[in-house]
Image (cartoon, rainbow, N blue to C red; front, side):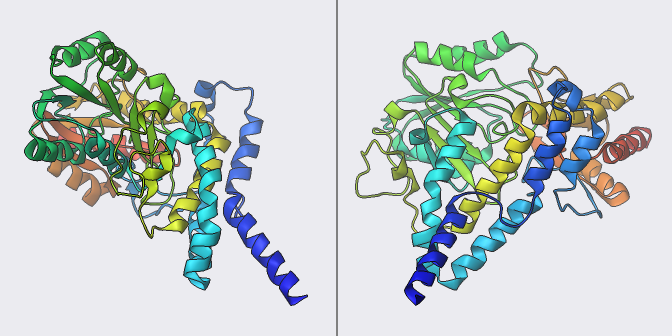
Amino acid sequence: MANRRQFIRQLGLAAGATSLAPAAGTSARAVAAAGRAIADLTPVEAARNEEYWSTVARAYTVSPQIINLNNGGVSPQPLVVQEALDRYNRMSNEGPTYFMWRILDQGREPLREKLAALAGCSPEEIAVNRNCTEALDTVIFGLDLKRGDEVVLTRQDYPNMRQAWRQRELRDGIKLNYVNLALPIEDEDAIVAQFTAAFTPRTRVVMITHMINWTGQILPVRKIARAARQRGLAVIVDGAHTFAHLDYKIPDLECDYYGTSLHKWLSASFGSGMLYVRKEKIKDLWPLFPNSDPKSADIRKFETLGTRSFPIEQSIGQALQFHNAIGTPRKEARLRYLKNYWAEKVKDLPRFKLNTSLKPEFSCALANFSIEGMEPGAIESTLFSKYKIHTSPVVWENIKGVRVTPHIYTSLPDLDKLVDAIGYLVKK
């Protein structure tokens, strides 16, 4: 009888760990129920339904002492994700090697399937990583390149990615050809032309940042990828700021490799990310962390990390459920509405300059602004010291301004306060 009770208890723990169902909290259910009440609305119409979005906001535990408009760095998690992380962490500490390796580790396959469903690809093309940098470094250092081979990227790419390519340049003698974007740009063909002008007979790889994190500029990835693939180039996409933000599937981009962070727009636990590798490309990509068969065609070879945070990994499941309860089209429409809400109110103020397009094909939640005669650091400092509005100053390449990034929990009164603050700054 004792053995039977132990077996039933272990079976229950395993089911709880791998089902990805939230055992502590009903946030996703409440959001799904609220969504059914507005099911007849288009995503654009739903974006303006404040009653619905107040239900979504109540799932978060953000501080009332500050207005957090720097979600582009790291986003907070809804309570259901926090509770899952705590629950899995407590479970792990009851018997680390047992519960981590024999119970929680078994949840990776159903998690892989759910990530693949959102990404629109095969589970056999998805690896669970810790962030976008790890995912893209796997590709950057895993490609076979020889001295003299060329890579095209932009000066506005994320520093970690530029530094990784720079190390390959120093170590392996490859050559980096940079595209320098004058943002914002509202001409897709002009963007594609800048990339293709950088291609040479020695070009082997092109790296494309789907959304420039400094300003929110969306690049026409598929058009660039098609031009690159016609020339036989490998295509890498940095999707750190578009996964669970914009409504698309990874195969739509026609890329070979893709990396993203899940602790941004998916609102998963801090330190979670994802790598996509087109199935036929897996075998020839070296893993960042060696394993017994580095030339395997199994996507799991990119997960040979040793001891990892299983609680962080498994709590991604609750973030997926919460996101799916809202739906990507509705979420994208709300995020764009929030950006436009504050930006439209201030764009014509004297001394004010919006460094981000308001056209839907070129931006969504992220935006960047500057004020003539003020340094970005001074703007950011005043916003926080006087109004307790947290933003991010940016001085990078030919970008100089302050980044403002709301999320789905952000309220209109908070954005009204930002509008008032900008009004004060331009008169200062």
